[in-house]
Amino acid sequence: MTANDLPRARLKWLDTITEAAAAISQRPVRTLLTALGTILGVGAFVTTTGLADTARAQVSARFDALKATEVRIQDAAPDGTNPFPDDVDRRLQALNGINHAGLTYPINDPGTLQPRNTATRPVGTHQPIPLIAATPGALQAALPELATGRLYDDFHQQRGERVAVIGRVAADQLGMTRIDNQPVVFIGDTAYTVTGIIDDVARNPDLLLSIIIPTSTERHDIHTQAPTFEVLIDTAPGAAPLAGRQAPLALRPQQPERLQALVPPDPQTLRNNVEGDVTGLYYALAALALLIGTIAIANATLLNTIERRPEIGLRRALGATRTHIVRQITLEASVTGAIAGIVGTAIAIYAIAAIAHQRHWTATINPTLTLAAPLIGLATGAIAGIGPALKAAQTPPATTLRT
Amino acid sequence: MNVRPPAVSVRGLERRFVGPPEVVALQPCDFDIGHGDFVAVTGPSGSGKTTLLSLLGLLDTPTGGTFLLDGVDTASLSDRQLTALRAHRIGFVFQAFHLVSYRSVIDNVELGLTYQGISRRQRRCLAGEVIDQVGLSHRRDAQCTTLSGGEKQRVAIARSLIRQPTLMLCDEPTGNLDTATSDQILDLIEHSHLQGVTVVMITHDPNVARRATRRLAITDGHVTEPTLQPA
Image 1 (cartoon, each protein chain N blue to C red):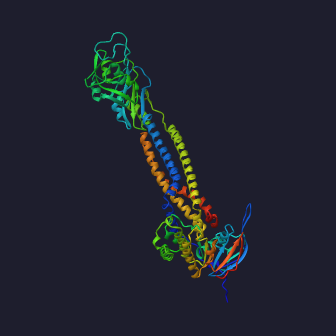
Image 2 (tube, rainbow over the protein chains, first blue to last red):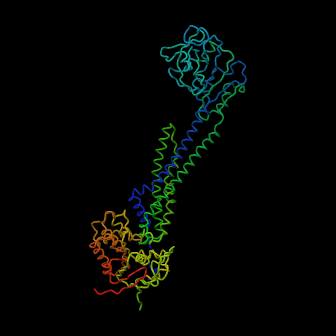
Image 3 (cartoon, rainbow over the protein chains, first blue to last red):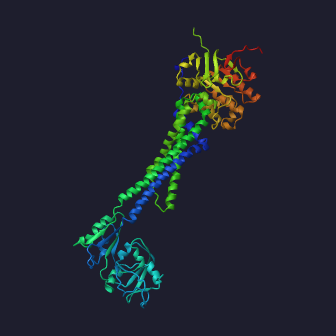
């Protein structure tokens, strides 16, 4: 006989898979302990990246919702006259991207108006309640929340009806909490029917302190002198710059330079910086989590391999080559890593959804990352498993059988 | 005329473990083992019996001397060729059984053929036959953790027999068993010997050694061959 006469030791791939599957499935506790590091690592990785995406979307939404949807048009050369046309609301709402728009200005009280809830004028000096004239569009552009009643509308505006909406603080001063008994406020000697009480506003917080009446009514009944006219516009997210360019032309086509549009600065750079900071932080945490997971699975695989040294020695005695041993242990670690990746991803998605729900955010999960996570687990397992596998394969069988 | 070389031929074989301190586990030794011999290697604990068996089983590499297996100088073989020899020519039975604990009896027996590239169906069929031979048909699907010591050793013998080895190396095969069970195990080993398999069995029990046809003694790493007294 010569050595070349002998057939080679062979292990079919199907048998490698069978052996690996048996080692994984028939020792579930050991598999779970090995997988735990990867579950935590991949889970933390997906959670942190998912939260990064969610937080970034939230930052973006906040920027869009608050600053980038508000435009104000002011008189660039005030001369006491109203530079705006009567139909501000109609002209601006015809423009693309504008939700609500309207004219508003404070009413100067020379001391004769004395807003109050009775016909009788008060004796002595009192803290006056501010008066504001606003078109229905301006009221809506302030994004009010009503405590009760309703806002006045185009009908009241066109007819110059004597109606008023009052802010919450002004309502407290007037002792007014309900409107079902059709309360009135007196401005000068004229009664105005209160249609609603505003509880809160997103813009122009001075509305909460004031009594607001339609501009047409103000011009007919009061005609205040030299007020500061302003148009308030609420736009769709991202439409503010366009509205700022178009509104002066729409309102005063013959002399648009008379009007000055105050558009919030484009928050893109700031947003990108904030998003970059948030994303960078979360990705750093994600990388750290994955590193810890890799070390954990490497440690678990090493301990597992040490524990299985007699089995590895036996397999070598039965004819397994070093390559067979490395192949089987690496395959086991890879499959364990992939399973752990799937489990970790599932847990992470629940965690992201739970955190987003608790924070009232919209959960944003990158599907590419979610689909890649089991592959990350597999790669983690393979990388972590190859070292212990090589070490086990290189140890002489006589040594491993003695342990 | 071609003369068949001995199954095992050892010349100046030694094994040293570098220290410190350096340990000579097996002093240089010479002996031959013919085909079909049943050799018992006796000696006290720590005398070098298992080291000798590891060298004969190609599980360890000698630090000196030559070892010819079926006339092939094992020192000239690559790791792959040594592995192929183990896979196709040598059967092992260990004192600690060395079964894969999380697998069934038939899986463990089948493992003996897994590295020979034989199909799973054929392995399964042969494993069933060998399990019948060792009297474990009723336990073929049992988990190894549920077996008694004697049953475990029978599984180990079945795993060795299924490979149809030319050389069977047994390391204290009855070391963990009671007398009655030991006799059953020795019967199985003796049966293999009668089938033509060369058997080398390590034991420290003289009664067990008496079952062999030839004896080697080892003391402090020195191998000697005592003269057998007629029964």
